[in-house]
Image (cartoon, rainbow, N blue to C red; front, top):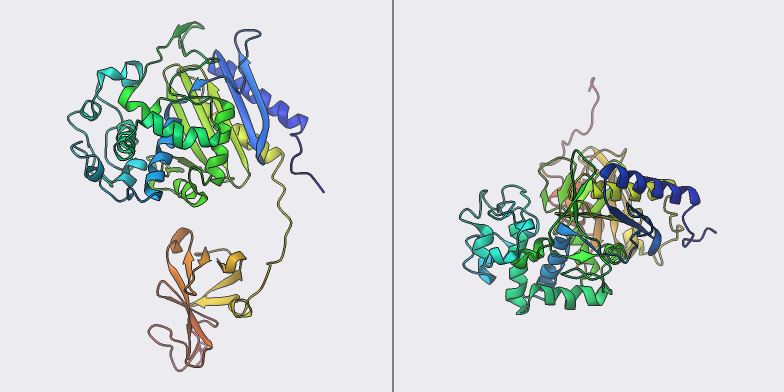
Length: 458
């Protein structure tokens, strides 16, 4: 039996090293560090540097830019899970007087609140936060260029508001809430608001010459919840594990799944945004995570739940190195070269004959589907032939099921019985499923023609 704790193959490790070597060379980054987590542990790490003998490691801090937003989103969802706020609450309920108070917490988390992308000049990423001491200084005189809820429009000021929301409800600073509620429980001791040695310096590289310019590392002040943090590859892999599995000390598994559920489509095709997480769907896999950048630094963190692989890339260069893309490619190298070994098939621990009798072929009108029994009394609806609507359904104590995904998400599936107790049909959000197509005698809406099925000559 193959061990799930086996090391990566030498060929896979070499492919990973080759990818970051090319990335550092072509991106002209002074340094780069990357790491991959697989099946619960760090499977590989590597680094490249322009200074011989001074390569960073997974304990070297880099600034992570907008990956900070994911941490802020976790703090907000903690407030929701504790009953202190509701995601549908208007911001005004908890943080009055901002000028954008009609936007909801949910819209702010998913960047659909209609807020502008950036704070007013001067460029907030290269100037001290003391220039913008108040929320009004961050929002400017036109806080909502778009109607709330009408479109996805990425907004750094939106996450500034969420950080201020956390402070208003908690009664402590965003930084203190972050340390106490996320970093300490997860053991992320090398994730901080300011740089702590060993850390990389931020650099800009001239676009037409191989020369460098030092970038300032400003304290972003009130905008810190949108991009302030410094972290390490090791700490971010710990965070990736949390975003996959949850941790009841911080946020439950169901709540982190909610973060990974698209809240609004992105402005470009093929991707979306959840609650503090970017979601990228390709032909081979779905990734969730976040990219990040601030002057002098780029970062990328991606997770594939299906492959049980996460990858992080950190580099100290302003532009030119697509850290998020490289992280996705590192993840893909591992997932494709050494695909996850599936767990052995095992039968259900017990069987309910009444539920077993529901399985098999059903028909919505003339469209056939199959119904399978899954663990915890769940059901799986699958269109026969693979075309059509399907979904997983979780069992409810009242004897019904709730759809978990796609078209039927949140819809109720119930068994409708005849007077003698036998099953007449399944009702799914008013759709009637019968054992036979338009089954005679079943409660099909509109009734069934008494003359039955006929051929051309009938």
